Image: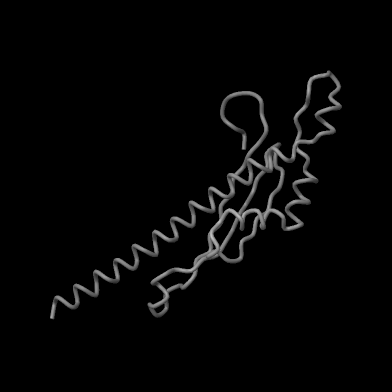
Length: 145
């Protein structure tokens, strides 16, 4: 009588461990996608006008906030993130903005648990989000983002 109960407990704990690892992997993938997109966008958003029209002759590196806003509003960022993530994520949304000279990207996505859906009352899906910031800077040291 105790063996079937113990076996059931082991299966339930194994299912919880698998679902927790799925959510942890999803969080890491979304973190990586947001960091990569922030780095790419910080490079793409360098303002050519400010760079070539510096008053003192030295190139000035500024971020073009309008370019970042256009990329975010047009849904281009969400498509780029979908290309980086696996196909089992749903409702992938990426938004970006320029704050204090940094490009800040926030990515959110939904996914399904594998085993938890069989348990009555347990959540069947998870929703995660991650933010990352990047800047174009020339000096060494810690980033201000």
